[in-house]
Amino acid sequence: WGPSDLGNKIENIFYSTYTAIIDGINKGRKGLGSIYVFGSGNGGDLDHCNYDGYANSPYTITIAAINARERKFRFSEPCPCILASTYSGGESGRIYTTDVGSTACTSIHTGISAAIPIASAIIALVLSVNPNL
Picture 1 (cartoon, rainbow, N blue to C red):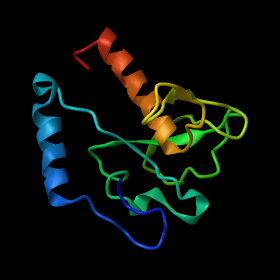
Picture 2: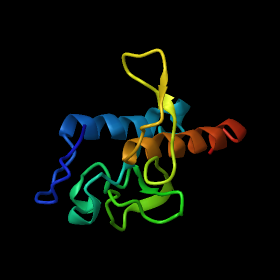
Picture 3: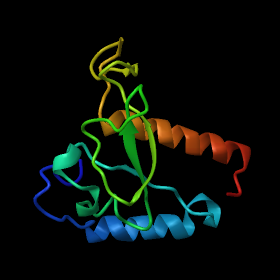
């Protein structure tokens, strides 16, 4: 979900989503603030994540994707609001995950959708060590 990856228009955050994010950063985690992680997008060099109101919000953390060679993944959108990059499956690496409608796992997990859970897990691990952050 979220803005399209066509690179031809700027899309702001919906007002209701914006107010929910503001409420979360002010009241979430017993006043320490909820943390919102969004991807840079899957439009590659033909798009720019500054066009995405979720990615370029000062209230969110924007994550890009890198490949197994630690280079920018071909679909990962560039922009200055990216805070960090994590791995994504494909090319020469695989990321395994559960598969919708199946009792098995799949190794076909790519795109920003594969990078965001890794970043979110790292944030969760940091908070488990120091929940006051």
